[in-house]
Image 1 (cartoon, rainbow, N blue to C red):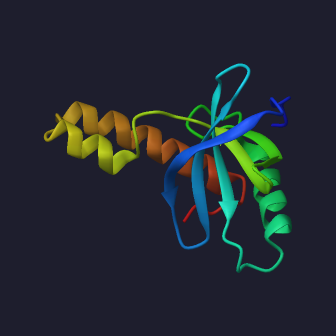
Image 2 (cartoon, helix red, strand yellow):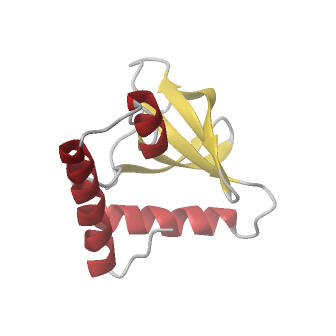
Length: 129
């Protein structure tokens, strides 16, 4: 899902990382709109091609309500980034830690959303790891 992004995105802070990439909170200086920017670690060959491929995959599934929306690839702070919807509140682990105890009905609702998203990805020949 390619959208018009502000051209004045600036890094705010790192909000996550993994074996392949760093995720930064970025903000438009003019509109104050926030996004998440995924930047592959420098040591990976063909990093730009990998980001473009991930953008293609996101573009095919971003319309599902339980899949993070992509705003395309863009240069942020001199680095090529996959710009994604910024969702507040942390991940599922953070959610459960904050709540300390979840009722069965809450767990069922969360798991139903999760399973719907994974089933949708699998139906589109995409494996989430």
